[in-house]
Amino acid sequence: MENNQVALVTGSSSGIGAAIAERLAADGYLVLINARSNNQGAQRTLKTIHDAGNLAELCIADLSDTAEIQRIFSEIRERFGRLDVLINNAGICPFHEWDEVTPEIWDQTHATNLRAGFFCTQAAAKIMIDQQIHGRIMVISSISAIKGGTVQTHYCPTKGGQISMMNAFAVCLGKHGITCNSILPGTIETPINADYLAAGNNRANLEIQTCVGYIGMPHDVAGIVSFLAKPEARYITGASILVDGGELIKHL
Ligand code: RM4
Image 1 (cartoon, helix red, strand yellow):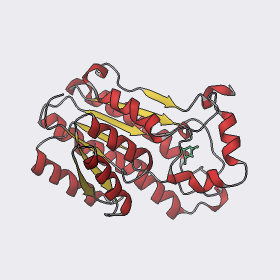
Image 2: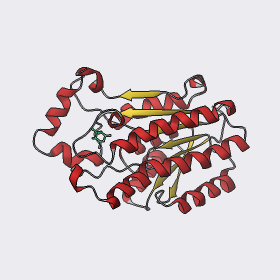
Image 3: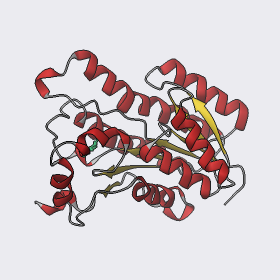
């Protein structure tokens, strides 16, 4: 791989984002670890990458604030002069019954999951085009883009929107050699659903919904991201790739 390539992974203080950050650093990128604050998780991801002898720096910003997005992308331009990979991973899933969702919960979920992804992609693509970089942009969407969830009526549309947004960007950016793809994880063992998985029979119920009989781990998602970032994946754009242990097809 060409030296000095830079990858930004939003929301990489824990879970899927942390695993992607570690994987891309192992692949040779200087990884920018984004988190809302300089918290323990961000420090842990940074230390894991450094301990493995790879490159990473913190990139602290709350991406639900578009001014913060502008700030970090100006900094990336000034400091590195390039961006090769953007992984739109930051996301929240505050579980609420459909009749308890308030406009505030709706707005907050959309600002983090969808609006931030749009403005990060817009800013990243401008750098890639200016630098003539055949960049890679991905969004970590979800099986929930397709499948409904009882406590996710406000969250599912953000995941569906992420796919349609990546497809639209794929159309716009293909001529610049930039690919835009969506990854759709099923249930993955992360802090976002730790309480849910621990309650009642939720874990067992989710396990039997998959073909493989178990719940995936963050590194199960990181592998496909690593592949899509490579030059050999140049012809894959506008794709939606399920990483769900066969959950979606099992009950069709
Ligand atoms: C996902 C999907 C999973 C759930 C997470 C929090 O997109 O719905 O099943 O665990 O959200």
